Each structure stands twice: as structure tokens, then as C-alpha cells.
Length: 575
Image 1 (tube, rainbow, N blue to C red):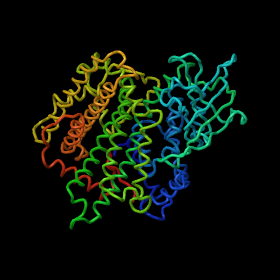
Image 2: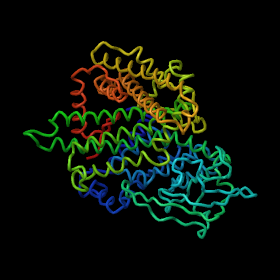
Image 3: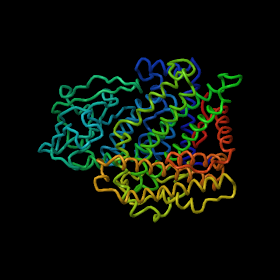
Image 4: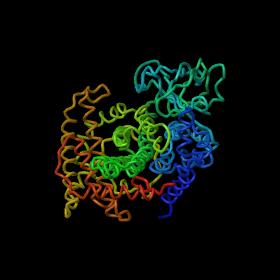
């Protein structure tokens, strides 16, 4: 292990995993049994919150320049993956909501706001973000919650925000507010409002919402009645709330799916344990070809997802002018892949998948919790609506023209420069990730059958990109907006799949060049991963070398037996 960034994050991951301990130990206060009890009661685990207090999880959300530990977005996702591995509700309810709020301030706040927010978080406080109004969903520019500008520059807050996580116990809120009654992109602003600044008689906390998943999260709402707040609450420029939110989303959309990978990892681990222990037809379920294929496919989907998460988070640092489209692709596609994988695993688990306690009880909890990550302010349709307007521009200016992304985009352990909060662009006209795909397809080795399969699949993806380019250039003006036809949304789906393929290819090539991880350097995982993506596009490539499935299964069993993560990091797990 090298010194520096990798050593620091690896140490924190190991520390947090050890603190959670063995999930199967019934005496463990943060083991599966106790976390399921808290979920049944609709509560966040008190012992889990104490553990995260002791670990100082909030420091992960505060930039190092302000005294925290946030230096890399991919590292943040990697640390929080250990929390989500145990309990999605604990990950969201304890702190990720604070991160989602804080990035607005790190991105556009002034020195006073950044310093104050760091004090709140490093002191153990929580911050909530309030984008939602149920009447308008993800259509923020129709939100009615008002921050009326007064002659002295201060504001009067009036109206309600619904479905706000930790609304009642947050020390401060980031409020997406209408500051101009006229329609248009300059109608809203972001305000950072501390609870202590609001008169009690001017604020009502709305009743808690019940949920199917993440039952422990404290979702309620805020109703302000002409509550005055000071001028210094404004984050960034007046009327630029949409810009602040869209730049902040590049951080949250790229990071959250990588955290959620921990929950899918646990779901896969649970089903592998079942198949190896459950006897059927004079053997174990693991010996049934269909069951093995499902487990191997889920493992590949986790690897594909982590590849896309990796390039999405690292692009924030390395390609900030391109990060908007990558972050949206991550937030759109990864929850879809993970959700489909966990659903397929539920079929293998059979009737046990809905048991709410016992050895397999954690599975149904993750099955319920994971879909929450596809909702909220960055739902699938909202992410696609961010991608669609950029497709014609990328088709004209970038695809098959741009230089490939730097190799370090694909290296999970390579150092990164600081987070360029002030350089995140709302849109871009370059796509180095797709350029890396095109370059790899032209130069990929094809000496072995596995390498030949990888190269052939890469060529399928480049052919698909050419089709996407032609169709993007032909889009009618209305089909380049959020009011686009279903065909435009399908186009963005295909593009996200191509980006995932580019990420897989880049990670494999980088591992092959660097060495150190024989499995990631082996084309026997890259080929079936690319095959799954190409088939997802409706293409029918040639059959893979027959031993690919065996190599993937062998690695899956090794990691299960040795208690190691099913992601790019092959992380040692507690228990």
C-alpha cells in the first residue's frame, strides 16, 4: 500500500468495518439482528449512531481545508459504502443528507457560510436539504416555497417543504426557495438557514411520513409562516439557485450510487451463503447452473456499477467540465443495475427473500431500501433530462474527435487533485470517456480468445455510439428538452450503457497495465461484463470463451469464503 491518499482512506474503511464488527453475531449491538429490530420499530439504530459519532463520520463531508476529511469524492463513496453495507437508512439518516445539503455551500457559499457549516458538522450537528414540494416533484422551477426579498436584503420565508430527511433534528437547512414570482431559470435561490435564526412561532415541523423502505429515516417537513431570516442566509447569487443545485448534484449523483453498492454487496453475499448451505436435488443450490449464472451475473453487475461510479466520482476532480453528464449517467444507470441484480437474487433465495428476521432477514431490508436511491431530487427521469440536452452538442463537437480521458480516471487507487468546486460546469462539449472507448477499441490486444472477445465487444459499443451520434444530431428541438419524447429518453439510456462499457474497458486496461490485481487485469471478467452491456443494448454478440463464467464464479467464491467485498477494491470485511 502506498502512502498518502490511498493509505488514509483504506485505514478509515478498515476502522469503520472493524467498528461495525461481525454482522452475524447476535450479541453485536450493530449486527444484522439489532439493525433489523430498529427497522421494524421504524427507528434509526441508536447504537449505530453512537458508533458513527465515535468514528466522526461528519468529518467525511467537510473539506480538508475546513478541518474535515473530504479530499476525494471516490473515497467518500468508499467509506460510506461500509455504512450502507449494514443499513441504508443509517447511511442516509445519520449523515448523507448532511452531505447533500453541504455541497451547496462548498460549491457556492461564502467564507462565513463554509466556516459555519464546517463548525456545525464537525461539532456533530446535522444539516438537511429541502428541495422537495410534493406538488411539483423534480420540477424545481415550479416550486412555490417563497423567500421574499425585503428592502434591507433579508428574507421572509413562507410556505412548506415536504419529505425532508432530519427536518426536525437538523441544526440548519439548505432551502431551495422562490425569490422571484416571475417564471424562468432565475426565479429561485438557495438559502442556508439555521434553526436558531427562526422564531419558534414562525415554524411548524410537519408530521413524519411513513415509508416502505428506509423506515428508520426521519422524513417530515417544514412549514414557515412569514419567518424573517437574515441577508447572509443567501448561498451564492440571488436567482442562481438552479445553477447551484445542478453543480451540487454532480457531487451527490456521482457519490450516492457508489455508497449504495454496499447494500447490493450484502444482498449478494446473503444469497451466496444460502446457495452454498441449502441442499437440493442431492447437491447444493450453488450447483444448479441457473443459480450460478444468476449469482455470477449479479457479481458482474456490481463490478460494472463500480466501474461507472469510479469514473463518475474521479471525473469531478479530473474532468470537471465533463462531470455533469457522467454524474447523471451514474445516478440513472447504477441504481437500475443494482435493483435488477437484487431482484434476480430474490428469485434464487425463493420464499426466504421476504423473511424479516433470521439469517436471511437482512435481504428483504436491502431489497426495500435500495429503490429509495432512484427517487428524490435526482430521480431517473431527472438524470435523463440532464443528459438529453447535451447529446446533440456532444454529437457535434466531441464524439470521435475528443482526446481520450487520462488513464488515472480508471485507477481506483491513484491520487487525485483537490475537488474543484468552483470549476464544475453545468454542461460540457467534451466526452473523454467515450473517446477512451474509441481509442481502446482501436488498440485493444486480441491475442487470446478472451482479449479478442473484449475487442469485439468494444467495437460493438463504438458502433452503438455512432448510431447514438446520428440519432442525437437528428433530434427535433423539443426532443432536446425535459419535454422530450420517449425516444430521447431511450437514447439517453443507450448512451449511459455505452459509458458503462467505456468505464469497464478503461478499468480493465488500467489494471492490465499497472498489475497488482490479477483478477481486474484478467479479460475473463471484462469480456462477460461488456457482453452484458452489449446485450442490454439489444445486440447479439458472438458467444464468449466458455471458461469466462468459471473464472468469475471462482472469484466470487473466493471473495465470499475470505469475506472480501464484491467491488473493485476487494476489501477485507469484518466477521
